[in-house]
Length: 98
Image 1: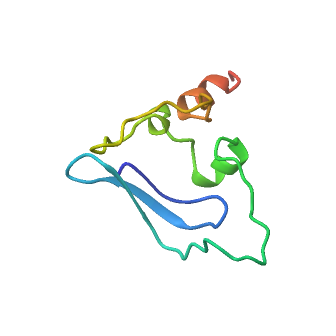
Image 2: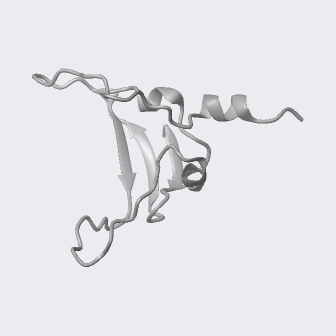
Image 3: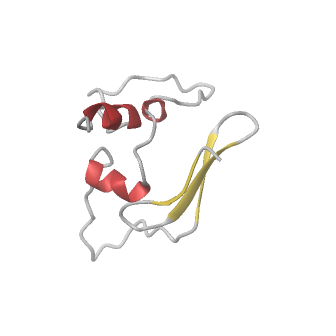
């Protein structure tokens, strides 16, 4: 197991992350995701926020935000705005010394 078990933020779904035999990260979770309800306002949350990530346990390693599996015919393109997620490395660096 690479990470988990734990709970995701907004819906509280249980999760675990594993690697398949080819090295791809796979998430296993146990919930019903509701994707569309025209009568409800979408819930907005920031995955980079420490308050959101605290529900997941410690933040993920920085490489999780930059790893990607290549797909044939789909070139990787950098995002328009560089991400600055709360990573485990950044979280540990920002902790006050005892």
